[in-house]
Length: 164
Image 1 (spheres, rainbow, N blue to C red):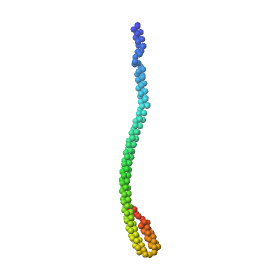
Image 2: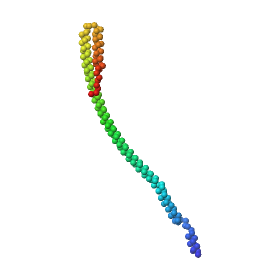
Image 3: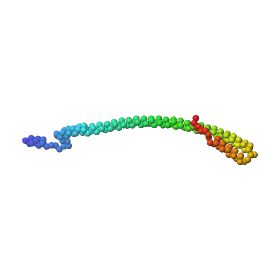
Image 4: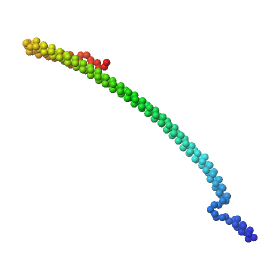
């Protein structure tokens, strides 16, 4: 009988080891798996979907921005080329204009010098002719002659055309 009693006592006692493999361990494992499944379906999957959508949207936006930057760089390059070409054209036109203006001014100065020289010789001749006459008459003629010189040579009567 002692043996039976000892068996009953030994069956009722639980061993106090590190791991206890009774009915609670499979229950806790099932509970853990159910909670992981619920969290995966209700929390992790929607968050991961939103993160994936955001990454995709950012990637698309980055690609569109790169395309816009390339188009902008191409437009800027075209504008700079256009500006350089037109600047060169403007410089050549200004250079031609200055050369033509210089030539026209030189021609006008030559004509003025010629007319001045002829006028001076005419004045000297008229002074020599009228040297024997009265001084007031000479002064009047001299003033009249100077007035005509100024009107003819200094104040242009026709408009100077600077363009061709």
